[in-house]
Amino acid sequence: MIPENQANFTMQLVIPRETQPGENRVSATPETVKKLVRLGADVVVESGAGAGAGISDADYEAAGASIGSDRSALLGSADMVLRLRKPEMDEISQLKAGCIHVSYLDPFNEKDLIKAFASQNVTAVSMEMIPRSTRSQKMDALSSQANLAGYMAVMLAANNMPSIMPMMMTPAGTLKPAKVFIIGAGVAGLQAIATAKRLGARVTAFDTRPVVAEQVESLGGKFLEIDLGDTGQTADGYAKELTPEQVEIQRQAQKAVIADSDVVITTAQVFGRKPPVLVTADMVEGMSPGSVIVDMAAETGGNVEGSVPDEVVNVNGVTIVGTANLANLAPRDATQMYASNMFNLVEDTWDEEAKQFVLDLENDILPGCVITHGGAIVHPTIKDIIEGDNRYVQ
Image (tube, rainbow, N blue to C red; front, side, top):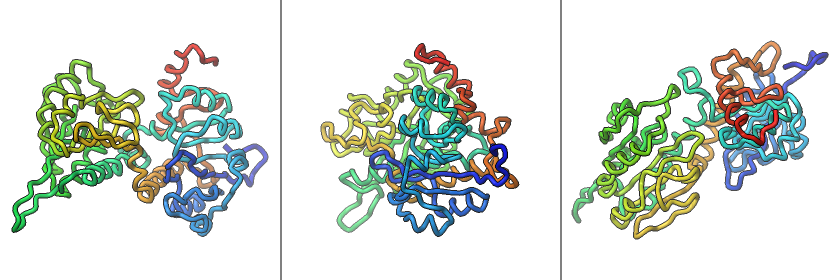
């Protein structure tokens, strides 16, 4: 990666300010900046990048970064861009050929964005595509952010309930614990189970992967048994997409549990595709007034009929929370975790002698998350999807 005839080349890592409305997270903390500088990188942070997470420009400067205010100049000079959200299309053209851009990219759906990266000869690394393995756990941003999202989902439910979660025995009488039903026991679901139990609720959970029943029970939840036939999980640990028939069996089996619940939290998402609708309008109607549903998949299409992205709606007395980007509700912690994921990815193949990030496609992690490189789309799955698009021109 070192340009010819530049023996003193120092790799410039740029941390831009996130421009998505309401986004308070950022891709670096003063702690990770210190570590990057210690590796030998020249770290430049856009002015105001950390404001939403309570990090000042002075904090970054004290950690060894320099501060820049000209966004176009920063992007144009970057050897590596570390950010959270995908870039705007016009920003890709500002990146120099050979630049490495790391962020969430939504590559299954953002075809034009991926084509633009390839056309600009920018190496695009998708944080969503980090393979799920023991070694990559420290880089797995989906899991780190899902942990916080699961916690915040329970907090939102508690905040919208007309009652409390724990049992309380008082001279005035005994208050029963809330009944919480969590659909999906992945990272977010397991954190939601743990959080609801800590708040004193009675928790029932369901997942299409029977293998997670033990994890649910170890957290104090009751696992709802539903015979869906052949389900299981992918090699990466994600739940496999159900057939329409299996989805209907799941709906009907859950109907009575949903009707009896004070809180329902849905976490079911299918990577790259619209999530399944698991709570239908008639199920919402069957819930008691004052009940709360938190649809964690509202932003990508929703698990609940009637949920609206980034809105809280009331349907016949049932509150449906569709708040998106739940991890962003705890921006300081979310930033700390995401920044750590970023640093671990950079450090994993950093050449200490040359002081550069080495794009080693023989590595066991990078081939799974590098989408474009050398002016081409190199990720096999994404390449197949985009080359199947008649608009694509190689």
